[in-house]
Length: 304
Image 1 (tube, one colour):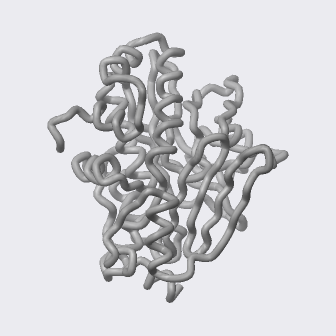
Image 2 (cartoon, rainbow, N blue to C red):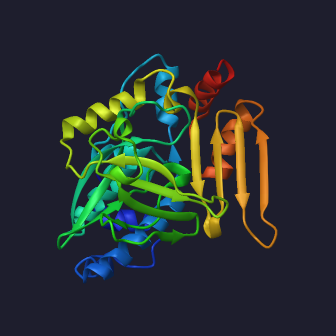
């Protein structure tokens, strides 16, 4: 790892105006001030570091089946130094390490995703996020759910109000108020979100407020990166959050973007070939990969 502190490197990657000293001072403030700091970090994080599973696909395309490295040296080299993105296990581990270096109390949790039709039983605990404890008040911090990630810290409190961001409204509610017993498993809390076009909140994922052991995180990471037929092992998925409610995403061949304004601009097209794929990664998401890697990934898209 670079001799520069993790906080300083993270601040540079996010292009924050605050110095490292400012960030450390703010992290020692009152709980409300720390929540403001976390909100700013989340908003900057999701704009600077995209969501992507490209290493998962490249590894599988090369005939391997292994989890993605989440040790801090590997993460900082990839997400901070190389300008890459990652998926939930990478984002969660990175921001949690930053928060801990800032002197905050943070621990990992695992969640079961509930988005998608046709679910009749709880899925696996495949999503990783972080809980921050501020003088006994606990907050969900999650920059790693892709385009629908909450860009604000959400308090684990049944009386807390939904929080509005540029990309939607998010809330935490007791799981037993929105999930049938057969779908609840051990969950205590459910994350719900809705966009400006939604009438109702949708349950995104559910979790228990239980600090998870490193071995549990490693099993979840391995399962997510290797199980055939899942969203993350089937096709490349890349998502980037833009300002003012905008977003751009790529799933397989399908490139979609929303750029807001007086007349919001929505575009959708199919990526045509390996050269177009490499260009889209570079120009739309800021992801620079060697051409042999993008060709390897694209070959898997072509046969899917």
